[in-house]
Length: 100
Image (cartoon, rainbow, N blue to C red; front, side, top):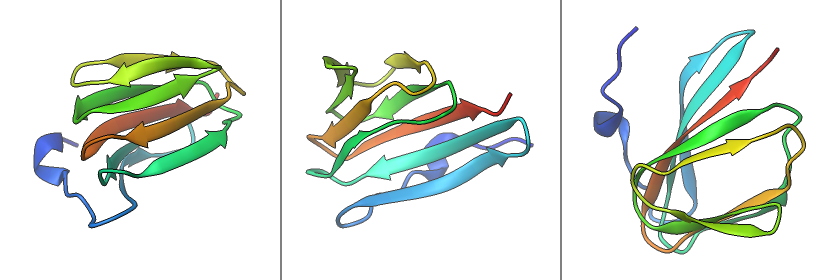
């Protein structure tokens, strides 16, 4: 499988658009496109994973620490880490979660 991720980016007028890139029993990789002004409140995942920011400007809060969501930023999350997101501008990122 080969995807040109930048060609898959499309922003909704508001909210979030997600597209599965890889989904199987070991790995979930999803492209998220957040419209400017969108927030995702505090939540957790039972899986470890990472976020890789493709474009935009936002804030990723990981266990109380604000991390700028700027192009090229890589954020590792352990299982059950409390996190939230806010898009100051249209922001896209890859979320990869492992199932094992």
